[in-house]
Length: 598
Image (cartoon, rainbow, N blue to C red; front, side, top):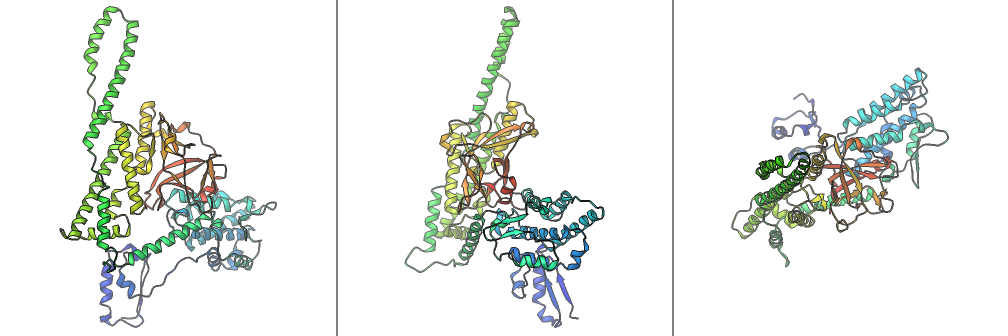
C-alpha cells in the first residue's frame, strides 16, 4: 500500500512454496496495489518454476559476458587506479592481469560442457575480488619485509583451493584449477631471458603486458581477439566441434518435443501403426528371465567340486609327509580315520561362491528386472493400441518415446547409465545378453570383460581384488588396481584369461588419442572426437609395491556425461603412459568412457 519494494532471493531453493506465491499474485490485482510497488524475485534456472509467474513478470537475466575479451573487460571495469596503487610491489599489477585472465578462462571453459568441467560452477566477481585482495595483502607484506621471494605456494593454494576451489565439488575439476594456477603463477612470469605467454596461436600471442597503469592493461585487453579458439583454454580444437554438436542436438530435441502427438492424415503410416510395429519388433528381442536358482546351484556345485579337489590334494600331501615320519602300524590307523573324514566338513553355501560369481548373480538379478519391465510395458502398450486396456500416462510416455526413437524412462531407470537412443541402446542390450550367456556357458569369467555390459562395473573390479587377496593373503584395504594398455585391439587376439585380474574392452578415449606404436597418449586427430582404446589389462597389486612414472591418472566414467554433482558416474582410475607433461592432458579434459552417445 505504501509503494515499497520487496525482493525474494534464491526462489529456486523454496520451490514448494512458490505455488502459494502464485495464488497470492493472482489475487493481487483485486487489491489495487500502489503504483510504485514492485516485487523482485531472484532464482537460478529451473524447470519447476511456476509458468504463470514467469508470464506475468519482466525477466532480467544476469550472466557472465560471452568471450575472453568481454569477460576481462568486465573484471577491469570494477578496478580503479587507486586500487592498483595501494600495493607498492612491482609484481602486483601483472598478477592482477594474470588473475583476470584466469578468472575469464575458468568461466569460458563451461562453454565446452563435460570436457570443460564435470560440474558447471558459478564462478563470479566475488571470487575475483577476494583473490585480488589476497594478492595485495601477501605482496604488500613481502614488500615491507623486503622479501625477494613471492609466496607462490600460499597464493596458489588460497586462490585455487580456497577461493575458487571452495565452489568445486569434483576432485578432477579441482585438479584442473590447480593446474591452471601452476601454469599461470610462478617466477617464470618475470623471466627476462624467456618471455611468458599464456598461449601462442597462429594469429595472436596471449601474454602479460608490460608494467604500467590501468590504461595500459585496458589497452592490452582491447587488442585481444573477439573470438577465441579452445586452444586458449588448454583444450583441443576438437572441443569446438563437440560444442557445436551438442548445441545442434539440444535444438533437435527441442524440435522433437514441440511436434504434435496427434495422428497424421497422410497416405503413409499413422502414428499408431508405427508405434505398434516398433513395439512388436522390440517384444521379439526381449528374452525370458534367467532362472537364478538353477544358476546358483550350478555354480555352487562347481565350487564345491573345486574345494573338495583342493582338499583331497592337500590331504595327499599330508599323507606323504606322514608316511615318512610315522611307522607302518600308526599309518593304518590314520588311514581309517582319514577315510571317515573323506566326506569333508559341511560348507556354508554363501562362502562357496567366488566374488566374481556373486557379481554375476547380482547382474542377472538386475537383468531379469529390466527384461520383465520391458515385456510388461510393451504388452500393455499393444493391448492399449487395440483398445483392450486404457491408455495411461506411463503408456502414453512409452508410445512417445518409441515414436521418436528415444529410450523410455522406465527402462532407463533399470538399465546402466547411458546416453544412447533406442536403436543403438537395443544393440547394446543384445550385446549384454550375449556376454551373460557366454559367461553362463563357460561357467567361468570371460577372457575379456566388456565392462560397458555390466550394470555396476566397479563391483566386478572390486571382486577381482577380493579374489586375488584371498589367494595371496593380502589385506584388502592395502590392495589397489594397476592398469596397463596392451597391444590387443580385438577380443579374438586374447588366447586365455590372465591368472590375476582381467582384460577389459569397450573403453573410449575422449580429449586425447592413443599412439599404438609408441604405446602412449597423443593429441587427438582432427575431427576425431572419440577413439577406442586397445584392451586394458587390470591387475590387482599391493599398494606399497605400486610405483608409477610417466603416467597420467585418467578417470574412467560410465558415459560421456561423466560425473555429476553427486559424484555418480565414476568407475575407476586408469594409468595411461604419457611422454608429455601431465598438465597438457589435465587441461584437455582427457577421460575414458564406457558408453558413448550416438
